[in-house]
Image 1: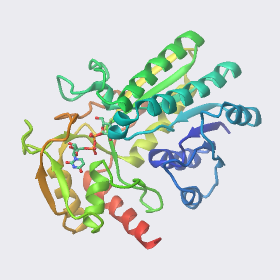
Image 2: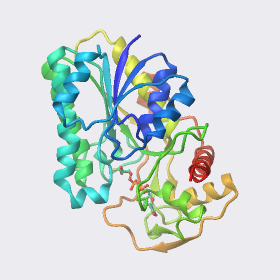
Image 3: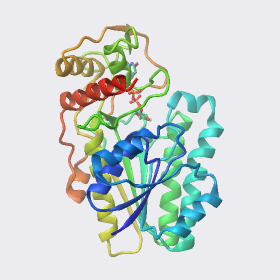
Image 4: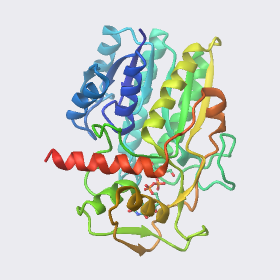
Length: 339
Ligand code: UFG
């Protein structure tokens, strides 16, 4: 059985991926500092997967603690989710973002180098493309330096990993997520936004449940069919499955050095209004909204060409927007039932 270190394994995409790894017979070790998660997620992972992963609550910047984990377990690979991810906050606290997202990454890579471990999967983002000149966005689309410090940590993380793979003959996979949404079909795992959500789907969900009065739609004067911005919303369980496939591919590679890059999206763009309509249709609830000014830094449109992931990983996003948004609503009801 292979042992995989999953950093940020109690987080949103991390927890769903841990379940998929356990269901595919990997031994999982989670390191998560709980800065954006809660302990009940660990219990729920066990309920869903029927197995409890090993869990260490600490900050990956604590090199001495990380060293002890690598001493105690024979680790075969890592999926690195641990990172700060709030775009707006990163503009106010850029040093915190660079320090947290990049030092923790480098600390793990130092252990990989010292112990001759390969197989590293990095959570990247479509933010590395900025506003692309053409849609859909494939992996050869030129990168643009993102505006936010958060986005810059993703682009820098990719560069660090490319150098790491080349210099030390390692296998790495850079997964560029489009917009992850939805919750586990059991309603036991999902996103836990802290405070007022920045992202669209958590805000829509909280508005439908009455926690927020009204959704603000940031702009309806974009050059898109209905004037609202377009994104590629990909279901989190589909996304989690892609990680297992990317890992299995790396492990099966014969060559020493591998740098895989995949866009993970559905290939379909949906506007903000389409997301609202889909949520209302899927869950038979109303989402009151108002149209507001554009949000600073927002791009007009981004959706993926994910053919490479289908060709090389045998992965394809399978879940519809309606279905994904149904799971989100079930998760919201679950969270309210816990209060
Ligand atoms: N939106 C609203 N109202 C809201 C929240 C969002 O109208 O209350 C709109 C945004 O303006 C945007 C769309 O919904 O047009 C999606 O917004 P999100 O904040 O959910 O997602 P973004 O595409 O802005 O950001 C996402 C990830 C980032 C990543 C970025 C890359 O959250 O981590 O994609 O483009 F950097």
